[in-house]
Image (cartoon, rainbow, N blue to C red):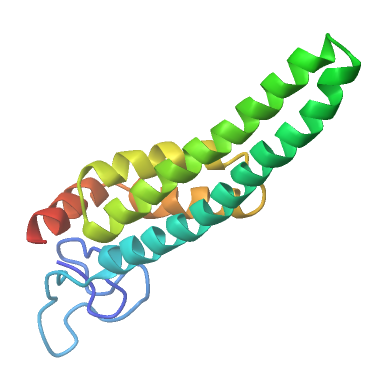
Length: 163
């Protein structure tokens, strides 16, 4: 059973919610979490945030690739050693940003559509995003807080099967 006010899971025999303090049976028995419960709201928020962050990453990746091609074209004519190393580094950085952005779009869409694979992909991207200070770090932490607690996987699967 879950708290009517905050959606936290209530232990058997508890008379108050441990999360918000509301009496567990205030006038009625605790109700099961509806399909639009706390996790469902978090999944919607996470899906939108992953899509927004991925848009900015895609723009940054495209800019890196375009600006890198221009700068590397100028470097290539001057020094043969840096003419091969710098384009490789810039190309890898831009390509990585574009790849992670596309994966973020897929994860955001999967969370919004409640696909079971989206939880795993989102958690992988969350760990990668911890190094992307400040917005990637914040979204990575929020994703882990929302999707890692015990019982979240079973609730996520229940939401996915209800769609």
